[in-house]
Length: 74
Figure (cartoon, rainbow, N blue to C red):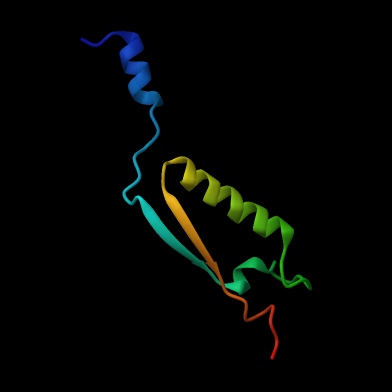
């Protein structure tokens, strides 16, 4: 039977990522708050950034592509 410290260290390890590298494509619309007048919501950008940080902490290399259709009007 494993010692208590061995069981605890096994439980404390972070989950392994399935992929080592990913490309995350974020629509420009995803950055806009529902019903908001701004094209980019700082709160939404912060939330997405925190999620990307968490994935990167798992050892995943993350490339981010952000759409700009709602930012650049022709």
